[in-house]
Amino acid sequence: MRIALFSDIHANLPAFDAFLADLDTRRVDAVYCLGDMIGYNIWPNEIIAEIRKRGIATLAGNHDQKVKGYAYELVTEENRAYLNTLPAHIKLEYQLNNDHLNIVLAHGSTRSINEYVLEDADEGYVLDMMAEAEANVLCVGHSHLPYHRIIGDKHVINIGSVGKPKDGNRNGCYALLTIEDSIQVEFIRFAYDIEKAATAILQSPLPDELADRLRKAY
Image (cartoon, rainbow, N blue to C red; front, top):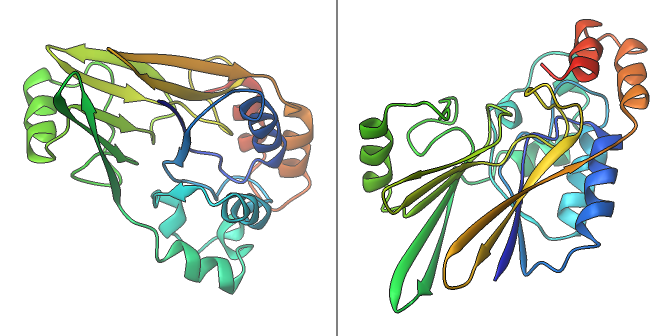
């Protein structure tokens, strides 16, 4: 079983198109979006339309819940209604080597849509949170900082950002989770037309610094 996980597109259509082109070359069995389709650029409706067209199960991100400001006012009423129906979490239950395997998907954390689960988060805190959610594997986004952390027999995965990387690597990022005899995680980086996305910001009422952040990936 191969699962593609992506999030934090932030209305960056050039990055999203490049992500889809890469995804379509890979043999995956399921695709999930962990939220933040909108904000920071001018193409929220195009992103939402393609995700709905492809029938991709999607979580609510913290930006998907916002309604004020230029980047959010671009969202159509129909798409606002869609965003308001998105779930906070998705739980996938598998059998692995005759044992139950629970994979929980969240945007920030299972406790809060705005919480950052960073790679150096307190081990005890993370394990308590995963126990509450009955999660063997916790997959999150929100921080835009990809990592795979193993704590005992638990896995914590941040899948990075498709449209607004913050780890110093300007290429977009998503994750492939392979479930076989063990759990394997691969981070896929892909190039996209950064200048097209940055220019769209500069030609809009959005703050110019957002274009700089795309160029420098911070």
